[in-house]
Amino acid sequence: MSTKAPEEKHVSKRGCFKSTRSRILLAVVAFIVLCAAIIPAAVVTTLHKKDSMGPKSKVFVPLYVYPAPGAWTPLENVVSTHPDVNFTVVINPGSGPGPDSVPDANYTREIPNLASYANVRLLGYVHTSYAQRNISLVRKDIETYAAWPTASSNPDLAVRGIFFDETPQQYSAQSLAYLQNMTDLVKDLKGFGSDGFVMHNPGAIPDSRYLATADSTVVFEETYSTFQQRSSAKIFTAIPDSNRTQLCTVIHSVPDTVEGSKLRSLVKEARKVADEIFITHLSTDYYASFGTKWADFVDLVAA
Ligand SMILES: *[C@@H]1O[C@H](CO)[C@@H](O)[C@H](O)[C@H]1NC(C)=O
Ligand SMILES: *[C@@H]1O[C@H](CO)[C@@H](O)[C@H](O)[C@H]1NC(C)=O
Ligand SMILES: *[C@@H]1O[C@H](CO)[C@@H](O)[C@H](O)[C@H]1NC(C)=O
Ligand SMILES: *[C@@H]1O[C@H](CO)[C@@H](O)[C@H](O)[C@H]1NC(C)=O
Ligand SMILES: *[C@@H]1O[C@H](CO)[C@@H](O)[C@H](O)[C@H]1NC(C)=O
Image: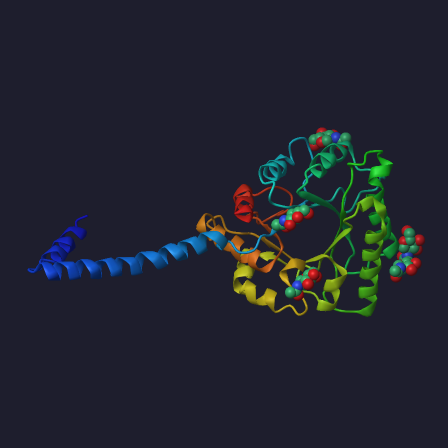
């Protein structure tokens, strides 16, 4: 207030014209200046509002959370309140489907519940140890997930594809054949429904010859500071023969200070580069619980 008052006085003094003609001229000029200032601002504001967050992405959730009663509630809450957002959720009963034909009673209670949401696609976790794991064991894990609906006599105890963890980055014809073989199996098995969705997690950008064997690939699984350092957009767009529809990014260890508009910018950047995104402020056991800004993150994916 105290800094503005003298300025206004100054302006009104200068505007003290003598003739009517000058006054009209001043009014016209003022009107033009005002229009020039307001119209582009209004146009920019409208455009800005319309697509300020860029393309839509899905929320990717590595749900390595044991389903003790209530433990999956933070996920169910955002799933039910954001019907326009799709969620790809990886479940992992025991570094895979576990030793039994169906997982324990907490899983058999919670999985059908989560699977019942139209905006949720569940995937079963299987690790490949960089395509070195005994392929018969990988095949057995995949077949176990696919058999859940029949083994449990519950059609809703089902996943719609497989998340392959620890897939290789370096190319070898043998690894490619291994992964292609597993993809063919997932696509063939009836237990995954019509989806048969395949995700790979090399954790970084793999040789691009692997990309076509998966529906989506996690090309970044690192801390917030690494994401910042790598000038994310550039590393993602530099991947040959790919586009954002095939990519997933996982950003963890986001500092607590990255909230509000800073979190908004981060989500916007992630949405620009990847169709599936997961962002957490947790810096240890990133996937074992929900971070404090979990709901804010989902709101920004929905925005
Ligand atoms: C379900 O989870 C609860 C809480 O962790 C546990 O006490 C219970 O034993 C579990 N039930 C089964 C069948 O594993
Ligand atoms: C969400 O899934 C539905 C049904 O599969 C699809 O039509 C829609 O385009 C998806 N939306 C996004 C943002 O991925
Ligand atoms: C792979 O696992 C199968 C089943 O357990 C076993 O019969 C086979 O010997 C294993 N192969 C290798 C190379 O370890
Ligand atoms: C996949 O591997 C199995 C066992 O090694 C083999 O029998 C099968 O022919 C392979 N399938 C394809 C499509 O390569
Ligand atoms: C992007 O990738 C998807 C899935 O592989 C493909 O269907 C689409 O044609 C690609 N778009 C471009 C512009 O390359």
